[in-house]
Amino acid sequence: MTFTSLRRVFLLVLVGAASVLAGCGSGTVFDAFVPKRVVAFGDGFSDLGQVSGQTYSVNDASLSMWPQRVAANYGLTVTAQSAGGLGYAQGNARVSQTPDAAGVAATPTVQQQIDGFLAAKSFDPNDLVIINGGISDMVVQGQALLAGSISPAQYTANVTQAGKDLGTQVRRLVTAGAQHIVVAGVYNIAKTPWGINSGQTGAMSDGSIQFNTSLLTTIVDLGAYVQYADAAYYVNLMANQPASYSLTASNAAACNSVDAGPGIGIGAGQVNSALCNASTITSGVTYNSYLWADNLYMTPAPQVLFANYVLGKLRLRW
Image (cartoon, rainbow, N blue to C red; front, side, top):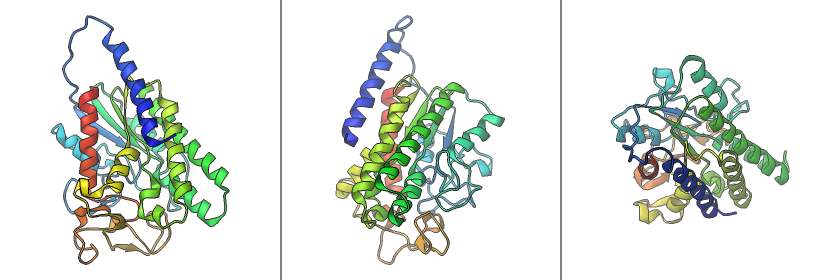
């Protein structure tokens, strides 16, 4: 099943659920949903600076991450939980397994991030909850596949389970009272510089599809509460047609901030965008014309474009 057909199936489910809800009650036209706060869980794609204030993009003092941009549209701010905010997402976090993509056991999984929130707080009907996950699981399983320590069949089984696990966490959010949830699956890892240079683009593309298929299957009945943000669909558009999005490069990293350690989980001595700022850009590169900051994570410009895509979905949905 392709990314486009997956998206169509899920949208049909959401439309059906919305129609059922619209048929209930007096038929009154309700005001558009305006969130009072934004809560975020996930991995490096949604990390708002949980460790040392550094995001997985170009740290240029802008609102460089898509959850920040979504919040700003409503006149809200969302900051890292480590700085007193409600952004629990953390780079390299896996959905439910440890250690993380970089081999660190202490990094809270998405499941543990939700545990931490629910231990101290509760959801309000006016919360907008953002959750993503799976990129780090794709890295862990992809590295194992490249090393030959797991078979292609086991790789597929493992990423499929990770997608199901993320769906299980979304169900937890609903059970805990969250009523407006944005869920972002994985973008196509084969379109990242790491995936492009891996020699396993076919497997990584298929793995991304399997993750998202499993996620959508697990949450398909939650249309009243969930808006799916199809990161795979939108990043594919930017990667395949960069000029249409004012991008000049979609297959290389803009940053040169090499991390001697395990960094983003794809090996030592690789560029790590959490160490990247406006002064650590490859010579001659205009970083906001690049899709990728490092070999896995995006620069601020495509983050803004994805946030605008999500906002369009939210305005139509609620």
